[in-house]
Image (tube, rainbow, N blue to C red; front, side, top):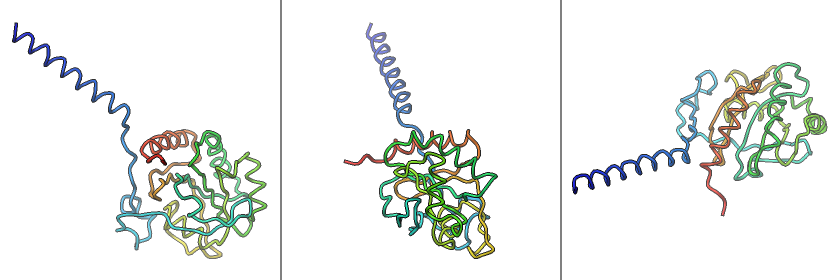
Length: 219
């Protein structure tokens, strides 16, 4: 009797442990990776940054579609979705922007899209506003940014690693990339996606939910 009783207790404890582990893992999805420059394609990374161990995105001073001068400090505590485009593009940019607009309405508070113009000399704030309005973009969730070309290209190459590290941001230089980057509230790289593919944007949205689950809630 005692042996059977002990066996039953042991079996119940084992089952309880299995159920706890199963449901605990359901509620605790794997954390998204934190990407460092040395983990990326070396062609995307400036040689001086290859051995950086705690990469954070760079500060900036740019102008959004409302004509406001904005910087990284204006996005403190925000999770960011970042891309690069230009309004006259007829190839990948319309696809990229359209795909981002699919998740734009579903973004919770505390998430912001930053779309940087790679032809800032042509994309003034008023041009960007017209472009943003054509996608029904809400400026409280989505900024289209213009400003100094050298700064924007430096952000693409040394902050977000969105394109090949080959150019100086000068007159002849040109960035054209489908990459979309997910950034956490601490300015760390958490995901890279092909913005021209709906399935990749769906993955981005799924990863965003995972990232928000691990983000400390404000008290």
